[in-house]
Amino acid sequence: MEENQGVWVFIEVNDGSIEGVSLELLGAGRKLADKLEVPLSGVMLGKDVMPLANEVIYAGADQVYVVDHPVLKNYRTESYMKCVCTLAEKYKPEIFLYGATPNGKDLASAVATDLSTGLTADTTMLDVDVEKRLLEASRPAFGGNIMATILCKKHRPQMATVRPKVMKALETDEGRKGVIIEEELELREEDMRTKVLKIVKDVTKKASLSEAHVIVAGGKGLGDIQGFQLIHELAEVIGASVGGTRDVVEAGWLKHEQQIGQTGETVTPKIYFAIGISGAIQHVEGMKNSELIIAINKDANAPIFDVATYGIVGDALEIVPKLIKQFKELSKEKGGEMSYV
Amino acid sequence: MHIVVCVKQVPDTKIIKINPKTNTLDRRSAPAILNPYDAHAVQEAVKIRNKTGGTISVLSMGPPQAVAVIKKSVEIGADLGYLISDRAFAGADTLATSYALSKALEKISKDNPIDLVICGKHAIDGDTGQVGPGIARRLDIPPITNVIEVSEVNKEEKYVHIKRKQIDGYEVIQSQLPCLLTVEKEINDIEYAPLTNMINAARYEPVIWSVNDLEDVDKTQLGLKGSPTIVGKMFSPPKLEGGKRIEGSTDSQVEQLMGILMERKDLLKIKTANS
Ligand SMILES: Cc1cc2nc3c(=O)[nH]c(=O)nc-3n(C[C@H](O)[C@H](O)[C@H](O)COP(=O)(O)OP(=O)(O)OC[C@H]3O[C@@H](n4cnc5c(N)ncnc54)[C@H](O)[C@@H]3O)c2cc1C
Ligand SMILES: Cc1cc2nc3c(=O)[nH]c(=O)nc-3n(C[C@H](O)[C@H](O)[C@H](O)COP(=O)(O)OP(=O)(O)OC[C@H]3O[C@@H](n4cnc5c(N)ncnc54)[C@H](O)[C@@H]3O)c2cc1C
Image 1 (cartoon, rainbow over the protein chains, first blue to last red):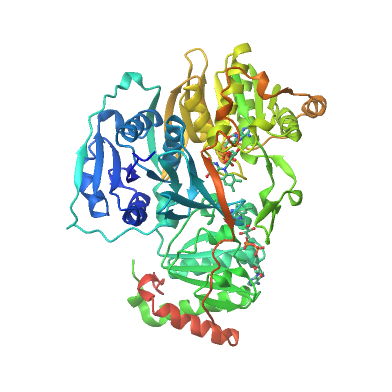
Image 2: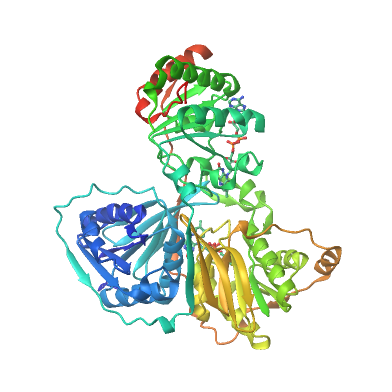
């Protein structure tokens, strides 16, 4: 176990660019590596990914292991886990982090089984006990009602998947220097038992919520589907995207992909309106990192006010129409002047 | 076609209560249910069997009460049920859980070779999603996670076509059979079971195995002993503070809010009168 050293981050590449969560993990991994006084490494697999290696260094890594091979063109558990296990056995990291994306979770679960080590799922807080060289990975449990710190004392590497948009990426620094290590591994297409036949991107989804600058989100407090129209109207006049709570989705007022929270989308817009939303932990989990949060709720004790930058205690059915009216007047007054498209 | 679905009994986290003093789960507060994702897994197995014929077995690891989720699975349409239940399995993390389940699967496949294993995407209590891929690795079959559609099952040529959810869309994968799928809820709707299923379920008694009924088991890989991870501590999520309150009459509140928003008007795409 003592021979295991260094912090590793799996770098996920999607469509020729590095996933945001991998950059966030390089930020978080940098802190752990500095505390432990060990190097931070990225592990990047794919086809024609070599040109991205520098970005990994600019984002905080001291070194990058790259396997660039035609068989790795698309993510597949078998080919990716084979590479990752081979590298981990050869270089023996002590900590290994993955983004908690569909592919990151899939890969980490398979690798943990083959390396016979522990894997903490969906971590939202990371720290390290320097003396014991122990990763402290904390995750929400029981529907987010509580946090649990998971430890892996006797097995190495200590592995964790980490939720996207929780950790902070470092500023890209093109002056950073690091080492790029290209690894040659033997992979044969004939050995693969799965084939990716087709990849379909749903651009509308990504553009509408995770990338939105402004989100108007509504909850059961709007009363019924008619009341919920106010959310659509407000979003319309200010050019925002619409989201909502799970209860609203279950009531059929919104589509499943518009659910925000632990079991829905995680969003980080510049402005987030939470209207008629109580602020259950599972909802807050998905929006708390928004820059400016405005909450409207008639219950002064609603937990949503604990995360709101500005809180308005009042009746949404009264306030929102007035807000819409103000914006509509504004647009009349100013003519085309205020339109930013 | 022999399909085995892994089903877990979980506390209903929708109504769970946490003891604020000890930060532990008040298990009595939550009724035990079939993990919702696993209900969809059984339903998908039924859909496949309706096309290909064959047998659906369900497998669960848990205390004796977990028989209830096997009965529930029979109600949805499973044919056979197996429960592995033993103190030796207790306290398992995902590595030890997938080990125990894979040993039971090996035993089940001796009588009737398995063509397909289906798991839920995750269990709503432990919520790791790691058990399915773990089982697949141990059985050395391909895992396919986040499945939203099984579009083709060819049992003669032994392959399946699967739609797998991705961050920004989906992909279509061809895999050999046998393989292991973990399914999302959107894969299907749970159908109303025929009355005969309910009658079968009420009477059904699954096969129950203890650790000694399984073969070639390395007991050091089971339960607490075989689990590399442990729960170090439990604590309440960090308390958040909240910001300013906007006070006053409704009109004044709206006025103040407009002021705040106008400071960020660069972000607002206000519809113009003539657009
Ligand atoms: C495992 C698990 C996962 C979950 N995942 C998610 C998730 O991803 N996302 C999610 O959102 N939820 C999730 N939930 C559900 C969550 O616990 C809450 O039940 C849900 O967020 C509540 O939705 P709500 O705020 O719309 O409704 P409510 O909690 O009913 O709140 C309605 C609010 O509206 C206010 N109100 C009423 N009338 C008015 C009015 N006229 N004007 C202003 N305010 C008014 C009320 O004071 C109240 O605060 C999950 C739960 C579990 C157990
Ligand atoms: C608060 C808390 C946090 C935890 N965190 C971790 C962690 O980070 N890492 C870790 O390794 N373990 C962790 N565990 C332990 C983990 O919950 C158990 O190992 C559990 O037995 C299986 O994991 P799961 O519930 O996450 O299942 P998942 O992997 O989410 O379940 C996926 C699917 O596997 C099948 N399955 C799972 N369990 C069974 C079963 N008993 N019988 C039949 N089929 C089953 C079902 O099809 C299910 O839908 C944690 C436990 C607690 C209480």
